[in-house]
Every structure is written in C-alpha cells, then in structure tokens.
Image 1 (cartoon, rainbow, N blue to C red):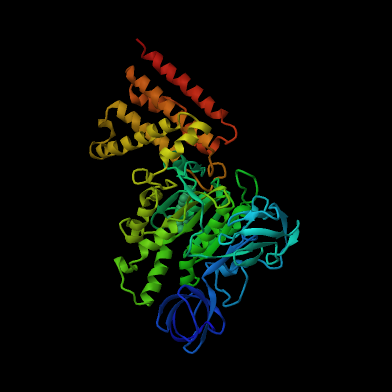
Image 2 (cartoon, rainbow, N blue to C red):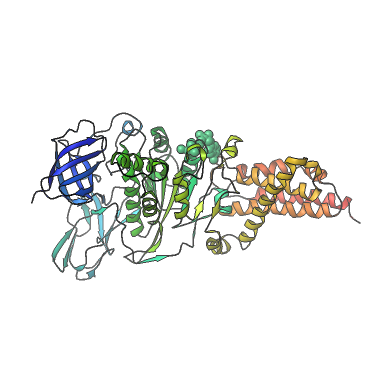
Length: 589
Ligand code: ADP
Ligand code: MG
C-alpha cells in the first residue's frame, strides 16, 4: 500500500493532508514537490496533521505528501563528531547557513558522509551470540573518540560473518547476524527515532563530579556526570558564556552543543573558537570531541522543537559506547516558544501563558534522558544535561523556569544585578542549589582533599552570613557592626572577588583545576582563622584590613597562579602568617 496524502491546508510549519495511502502517527514524511522533511503529529480519520521541519513557504494545497514508513529519526554512525548539523541532522557545511540567510530546502543530504572511508577493526568473534549493544568492532573517529560499532538495540542472534580489518564506507556491510526472523546485514549506521529513548541495562546513581573548571560551580554548586542542571537568567546575564565555558572545559568525553533559537553569531563564535581551543585533559582540539547542532533564530521554528531530541539521541548513542557525554541546550526557552507557536497553529487549547498543556511532559521527556547508566554492552556511560532558560524579564516564576525546576537537580540562577556589577559568572549563591554536593563529596575526598566538604561548608556559611549582615549594613552602615562581623564581611569579599568571580575571556582564569580550587579556598579560610585569632587578642579589624599587604595579591591569585604550579599560593600563605604573627605579637599578653 502506498504511503501518501495530498495537502489541503497550509499554516506556516503546520500542514494538513488528506491521506490517500497509509500514513501513521509520528511517521516521517516528505512534504511537497521538494520533499521537505515533516512528521505526522495528529491523525483523525483520513486527515493527517503534519509538522514541517523546513521553511514551508511555497507549499500549496494539492501538493503531495509521501510517507517514509519510519518515525522521525536520525542516522547514527562514525562522522558525527566534529560535525555541525541542524535540528533534523542535516549537515550545515557553510558558516553562512548558520549565521545568515541561505538554508537549502528539501535537498536530500545524508547526515553521514557516504564517500568517506573509515578504518574498521573487528573485535567480535564469528559464531558468538550477540545482542543489542554488543561491540562488533571499532573505528578511530577522531584522535579523542574511538567509535564502537555496536549491534543495534533491537537485533540479537548468532554472528555469522564479520568484515575483516579495512576501510569501509558507512553503508558497506560489516556483519551478518542470524536472528529469529532471518539474517540481518549490519552496516556502521543505525537509525533511531529521536522521540524514543535508547534502552540501557541499568540506571546508576550519578556519583562522580563533572569537573567544569568553573570555580563557583565545582566548589559550591557541583554537577555530577549524569546529572541535570538549568541555568535561568535574563538577557545578558551570562548564560551563553557559561554554557560555552562548560562545553570547553568540562571533563566530558563527548560534548553536544545545541544552539536553539538564539542568534546565529553566537554559534559562529563557537565555530571559530572550538577548533583553536585545546581540551585541557588531552591537549587536542575541542572539535575532536564536539558535535554542534544549530537551529538559530533565523531557521525554521519546528526544527527547533526537534533539535533537542536530535541532540539527546546523539548523546545516548555515544553514551552507549561507554562515554561520558555532556549536552548543553541554549536556550530551552526558545525551544518552548517553538512548541507554543506550533501549538497555536494547531489551535490547541493553551495552558499557562499560551504554552500547551504538554509543556511539562515534553520538558520531562528531555531531562529524563540524562543519567549515568550501565549500557546494553556492559559499559558505564553518562549523559549530563545543562539547559539554559531565558525567562522574559528575568521573572523566575514563569512556566518554563518553574516546570524545568521540577526536572533538574541543579539550579544555577544567574542574576541581573551581579552581571550589571560585572560579577561573572553572575551566579546568585543565595538562589542557586545543587542536589549533587553530597554525592560527589567522596570523589573530592579521595582525589583532591579530605577537607573538601568541610571547606565548602565554611565558605558557603560565610557567604550566607554576609548576606544577613548586608541587611543590617544597609540600615545602619558598616561601622555599627562589631569587629568580628566586619572581619567576616572582609573575608566574604575575598571569596567573591578572589574565588567566585571568574573571567571567561582570560586564558588562565577561564579554567581552574580542582587542586587549585582547593588551594585557593584553603588560603582564604586560613586568612579567616588567623584574622579571628588576632581579633580575639584585641586588635581592631581596621589593622587587619589596612596593614596586611597580601589582600590584592590574594584576590588576583585565581587569575595569576598557574594551574600546574601552586607554589605561589604557599608563598602567600607564608607572607600572611608572618604579618599576622607580627600583629599577634603586639597584642600578646
Ligand atoms: P546571555 O546568554 O545570558 O544573554 P551572555 O552569555 O551572552 O548572556 O553574556 C553577556 C555578556 O556578559 C558577555 O558578552 C560578556 O561580556 C559578559 N560575561 C558573561 N559571563 C562572563 C564571564 N564569565 N567572564 C567575562 N565576561 C562575561
Ligand atoms: Mg545567550
């Protein structure tokens, strides 16, 4: 039976068609004479409603619709790393396509290059029983990513033939499996429907930190590999800079960066920087571990809706190879707006602020695909998801922020007033939280310092205390405070300016190792203790503030002391002790 229909009505990205053949719900369809990519999103009797993922201008009633027999899906195989694709996995070759005006339509471009040859090294053994997730062989995809060619999740049986080592195109047969219903020939490519999660054998709890090199995150609001976070913040608060910082510096093995509905020039920034930047763990170009998905504001709105599912499906595929994957989506608010726009054209009943009633379930179906897992093939892999949220007017009570909050365990709230004061990252330490601080503590204790949890608590208690004292200062001025409290305010300033603030544009400051983070915190807490000791002997706080000469140097330490040589921090501590000892002596006995 032919899978087909005829268009009866066009409303932007929403098209209705009278079904003349057999079309299924969620089926991917070719729309119009140019064969634009579409998906059946509703089916009533012989009337299909179709969402078109490409610019739909020019479609008219009477145009044909053709079914593909498959749900909206992506191709998975070698060649994805380092590539730049749109929300429905079409390769974007020229920068102009991302930044500007020219987006080809209906051209059938394969996501994976058919002409490229990959060196396949077989690792499975003919005669073995293989099931979904089993590794047949590997391909060196980039110097950083060894690509496992896996049996697709829905195939199992006896391996009756395996290609020998050699160069193969992605469509060349590399294995044959005898399954219950006949022989299956496998290539290096799998297809997977983007709205369906890929199966795993077990979900594990996320215990290891994702080290980001961003001090305020790692030290105060840590992320776990396999965790979820949202970055809410108004325009200009620093969401994009922070997401890009995470994509550059975090210790994920594969990074998927989804530029979703934001301006094209932000994506071109990434494209210009990433190939030149080095991964701090391996020294290789960042593009050798990165996939960019661009559906910028000038691109069709429906593909924006698909882009985050495309992103998470690619993330699952690399996770299934046993990699730790991080996915950044900038911005999920623009994604939700696409959902709202299409819903409006479908004339659905709107819920809060015009968003469809299924907004929360769609958000959930995205964030729930994060996690640390045991894969079908028996490896441990993870997907960390970080979504930027851009609430209109910075109002965190709006629906996208509120629903997102229910599905993420970490909340990095960016604050307009901090950004205005040039305190970057403008992460509000009173409004942010992390659900992983306890779970990652063991890693820090074993790998960096037994004092991590303790330090972290002391630092955050100084910051909380500061915020309470600020209220009093606003009413009566700082001089009314007892010396011990003024000292606490002084140390809080050291924490804010010398630790929390981090300049993303400074090569040294942009990334701080866990060891250096720990050493900086210990130095600040050492100053806190020594100061208290001196105050207890009766010295006035003004002498600590004015006569200890090390403060400016301490504040600059994060940006001046190299990650691989912390000796300057020890010297600062020694100088601090000498000066504190001198003060102490004056007030002794
Ligand atoms: P948003 O995406 O929230 O609209 P951006 O990430 O584009 O905001 O940040 C706006 C501006 O703030 C940047 O162009 C940059 O000047 C500044 N900025 C943000 N974060 C930092 C940072 N960590 N270091 C230095 N400058 C920053
Ligand atoms: Mg932005």
